[in-house]
Amino acid sequence: MPLPNKLILALAVLFAAAAVHAAESEENTLGVLFRLHAQSPSGDVAVCTAATPAVAALGPGAYRAAARALLGWRLLRSGKPAEAKPVYQALLDDPASPPAFTELARRWLTRLDREAVREALQKMWTDTILYPPSLDTLPAPLPPMRDRWGSAWRYRPVILKRLKTESQRYTLESAGLGADSDLAAALARPWPKEPSLRAVAVNTDAGATPVVTFQTRQAPAEKTLMAEGKTAGGLALVKTGARALLIVEGDYVHLVPQPGN
Image (cartoon, rainbow, N blue to C red):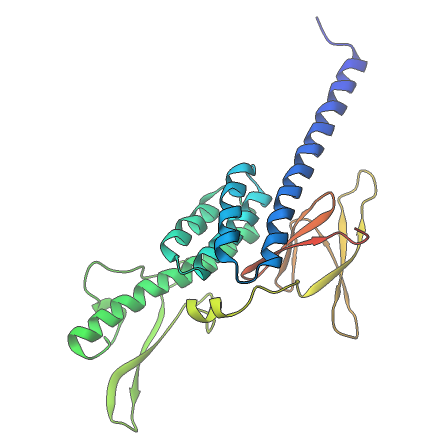
């Protein structure tokens, strides 16, 4: 027997309300985690302890991706790259991870892979007192030979002409990261307190896709309009939540209040 139209409408409203409530609950869970992160710049263990169950509790999508990104970075900061790598790999492999997060995962995984190449180069130097002319001569087992965008490493041994020494140094970069390829240097930077653009308004007209107006922090102020899923100047607006905006910029994630909250 078909359901009356009024009952169908009532059920639709009920399911929509439940979905909104679930989304707000996940936003609150992530908000608690990011407040702890902001209040504990050196509390890597505490943030990891809180982030691990948060990842498990959050459903597939942007909020789980954000918790994973934060957990991976805190694990790296606490000197646990072996534990951080599968976190970033899960972020990359999860089909529900938004593109901005898979790009973030590639950045950190590339730096971790570069460390494996550095270790192989150091072992070869220990054996021969020279770095090899190319990575092709590294012995097995080979480290990752490409970065996470599929490009070969930019490797070059350096000849110190003044000291008349050959192949005692080298440069090793990812084509995708360039001079920002080194893991230690990336981890030496603090997590930025805020993204480079400031959200100043959100258009939430009924039935319309929310559009956020961002403004540069330096004068003269310039404005940029972005919808969810769009990127401008390296900043990606991943999600417009009930009270907060989820933003990815380079290596970092930001959960910032919507204007007026």
